Length: 137
Image (cartoon, rainbow, N blue to C red; front, side, top):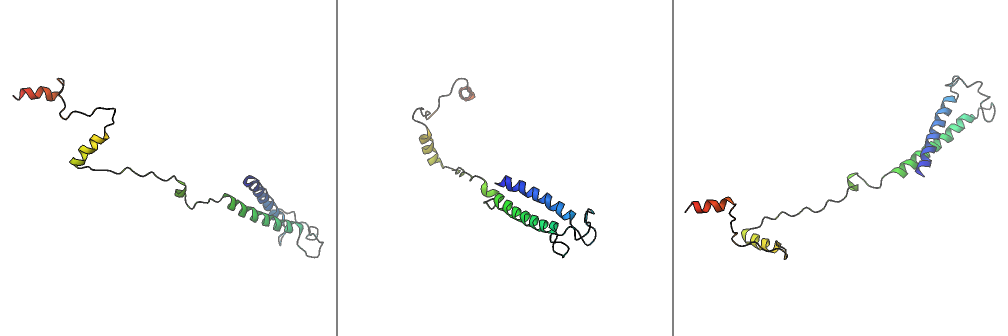
């Protein structure tokens, strides 16, 4: 529907431009096609509006209606571009545990399939702490 109205709007705009250019003004007309004023009149030489004048009025009315229809059909229902963005997820709460809650949280965080680390880890012979400890004796 929007495409049809858009194409109609462009055609009516071009027809309106042509009709305005061929109309008689107080002089001979924009394109010099005026001729005598009575020959272009719809009802003769009685001074009634010319055929080009009536067609221009109707083309202007159709142009205005298509303008309003396109504006209505293409208007967005949201008020802002930001309104169409997805809602952000809640950020993770930063938790600064104390020493008592840190040990409890660390024990609770270990899954059941894993073994909990020993209270005093055994130093491997490759670690620098294991080589430095006997040297202090």
